[in-house]
Structures are given as C-alpha cells and as structure tokens.
Length: 247
Image (tube, rainbow, N blue to C red; front, top):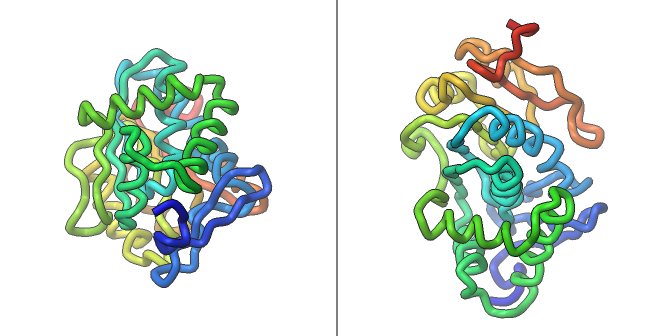
C-alpha cells in the first residue's frame, strides 16, 4: 500500500506543515492538534525528554500512542544530543502504524506517499532539534533491531507494560474515545506499577482524575499552558525531578 487512504486513514497537513491522521471508522479523533503534530510533540514532550536525559545516564521511556513516531523521533534526538542511552516501550492499538514505521526504519517500505510522509516527519524533527536525519534514522533503527525500542499493541487493564519508566509520555485519545485510560483508578494503578521513583509524566491533558491520581502517587504538578489554545497541560514530577525549591 502506498497511500494512507488505502490503509484506512484520513490524511491532513497541519498549519506547521506536519502530518496528522484520523482513523476511519474506529475514531474520528485526530492523532494530534490541528496546529501541528510536530509542534505539539515538542511543546508537550520535548522539554520533559530533554530534562530526563540531562539528569540520567540511561532512561527508559514509555510512549502511549505511536502515531507517526513523533515522540519516538524526539526521544532519540534528545538522547543523541545528551550523549545518553535509552529504551522505549511504545503501545499502539492501530497495528498498521506499527508495521509501516518498522518497515520504514528497516528500509523495506516501498516508494510512495507513506514513505515520503515519514521522511518528512524525520526531516522535521531533524530541523527542529539540530540532529541529522541520517543519525536519527540510524539510531531509532538500531534501537528497534536491538530490542531497545519495543512496539506493542493496545494499552489497557490487561496489557500494562512490565518494569518501570523514567519518562511516561501519555498521549492517549481523550476520555470520550478511551474512557478507561482516563479514570482515576486506572491511572493510579498505572503510575503505581510503572512509574520509576525518579520520573516525569507528561500529557496534553489536565483533568481532575489525572491530577488526583498523580498527587496520590507522590508526584508534584507543574502548571503548564496548553498547546495553541488548549487551556492547560500536565507535567508530574517525582524523585530527582522535583527541584529543591518545589520540595
């Protein structure tokens, strides 16, 4: 398949020139803000990832929602800039997205719209972070081949990843589309099972359930503005990521 439409997606180019997708049939919710997929990723997740790699010799990152790999490419870029090692566990319920990104990084994706779009994603992250496209491509491909980047299926009560993470990039669909993933009980259980003692949790959302669950799990919350008109976002800090003035 050479087009997103053939794979069941609606393709849109956002105002900053980055690509966003909507799944047809299962959800009408876009995978990113209309202001720009890359800009939103850098705004919500880029700075927490930079902070994680500035303080830790090696970081384990959880990314909920693969999409077109924006979070994963930014993770690799921040690790490269800091000269640090990383592991990523990504969970994505839409299997074709996992398949095409793996094929792209392994050089097995045929020419066409999808390959061109993924090259543009790679180029956008490269331009914004200052890390070369070749280096980003090689580093994520190496992580995939070495098992340091593990792409799994749907996330839920029966499919919580094992182990603990220093960074949790929580980019799930909204509570309307994925109600379970935003309940206080589920979130509290997830932080309890998977958040490292030293960890950051970052998400575009700012709900009562989310904030209560983080506070109950020992996180301190940063007040953050939302992306391009959204009211607010959430960053939870625990352990070494709580600065002395905030403790």
